[in-house]
Length: 123
Image (tube, rainbow, N blue to C red):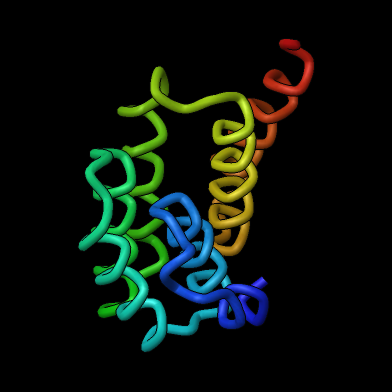
């Protein structure tokens, strides 16, 4: 995904594209490019949800603290629950489940995978 984003002309990308881009950069731990993309995302978005995500990822790209990033994403997930569509909720459940798994917190990982399961059967 990162290679695809690198080939797309940046003037055609919107805030939601940069959002997906930084999550890919976070998963691949590409900190330098991640900081740059967060700056671009912050400069173009007006949406509070995306602004919050760009800020927490920018901080992650600066300090590399996965535990803090995961806690902050969890806060966003809970705070913007009404704003997020089903796809976004599913995506964040997978992201949080995987990050908690990487951190060794099996209980929290299972909690988010269970939420994902419930979302999949809610429609």
